[in-house]
Length: 239
Image 1 (cartoon, rainbow, N blue to C red):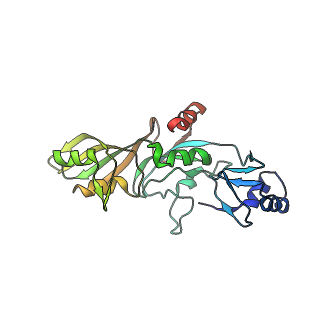
Image 2 (image 1 turned 30 degrees about the vertical axis):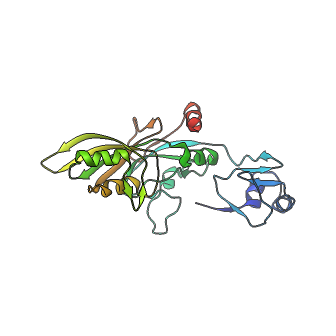
Image 3 (image 1 turned 180 degrees about the vertical axis):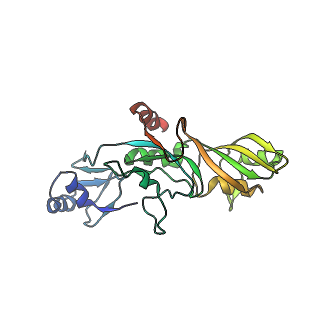
């Protein structure tokens, strides 16, 4: 994620020149995410909420998109390995968007892209428990006790995961694999893959099908659409 000096962001918002913005910071007139900042050189990201004299600055118009992330794409703004990133798909837009959370490189599915930092922080905060629905193709066939373990909360690296909803969509006895729908509220690194691996069934293929009330209806790999004001308002009600 790109970080910028606070005085530069204030200046680019048209509040004051960079030099005057520095004086505002030192004078204690600037807050970042509600916290007073008086140190010059402080860096902020796109999701930071900045106020000057308790008035929020307008950095740019706010937009949130639903994106169908393909496999083989990195959920970051920049990649030091030169791989394609989710941000690359939005190069034609006049504002910078960043992913809300992430999907693994080899995982496809629904990813929100936004420049609304307040909304992003709201959705990513663990206490809000935004439901996420995944469909996984796993090796082997889940036993009833393994399904129950997932439902009650499987242990991963000594940490007990929150209970998950499990639905078997398809079982292929001949190929010894299953298609399983898993609904979780957490967003830890490789969470779904690690949960299935913990019960002895590695994931072969994974896609996120739903996020809160949103789904991938009518979209294909690499496509996106902007959320309506009503959809954004519904997302803001998760807390």
